[in-house]
Length: 405
Ligand SMILES: *Cc1c(COP(=O)(O)O)cnc(C)c1O
Image (spheres, rainbow, N blue to C red):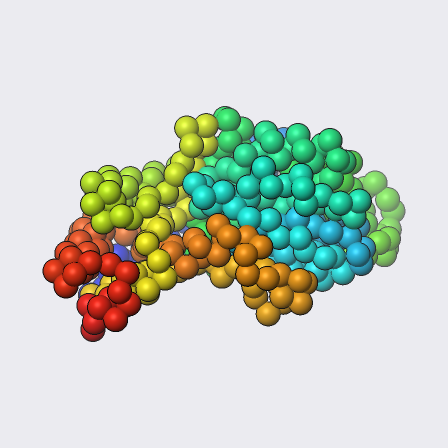
């Protein structure tokens, strides 16, 4: 049985590759032999306890995805039609869809040009009598300015739901990301630091919300209280759904979470290598590297660069592809999407989002990415910019296109 997926088996360098750390398949077999493959089994509890300890005492509920955890959050906060939720435009669609499903109106806030996180200075002017929640997304696992966000939310009596899909084990001023908001969500999708293919978690930091979270999590029943012997039968007590992942998935995930130091150490090495080797080139080629403020311990979720404009970014993607390297862009502004426009979004609403969305490029990044593959990525970037210099500089889309052929 293979304990490790081998690194590159072809000349192609993929953007992402899910990797085994060792014990996943053994734990899956154990989950089945124990006789509970459905949800809320032994491995679900192990994952939850591990995450609760890492979060400093919150209650954690494993879910089938981060999307589901966000939907649980919207149910828990009792979102009603007409309520407003403030979300960054620069995020994944689930951050906002979960609330829109409950009839909420999304209010899009722009991001800061340095960390690409929700711009806390733009927050206050967007708050109305209908605002029920703010959903900061810790982009690339670098914490949002939580001091300001929590202060503003507290002053207005608005809930904070941290979408911490990128930032598991990251910290802001020494405190774990995901431990600040009333609620927070995690993702264990295959593109995230820790994975079971599809998975997630809801973190409940506000103790008053735990009991109802447990009910919503388990199909609107008080079955968990029944299993603890607190009631003599279980019944339908509230709305809810099936948010529990199978214990087979939890078994896979537990092996990954147990190996968190090893995984994070590998990811840090990959991130540091890119940063170190692009540092000198960044100024020369006009590339912008990620900003990680000193009070933020990042989670090493991804490595991105910002190019001059859309045509340069697209030409570089094509050039890298021609060298067998898969680098990809990221979020399209949600306020300009088909749905976003229906909610009144228009060009110019979030100018930083609109600009970085065109210019951002994510480089290949996974646990087993080798230094020699990373050197190939850097070499191909150098080749791109050197060729461009030869044919007369940037900002000419036709020339840029000809490079990548
Ligand atoms: C990946 C991601 C999600 C959704 O996670 P799933 O587990 O795939 O549902 C939500 N928000 C952000 C910011 C993400 O990156």
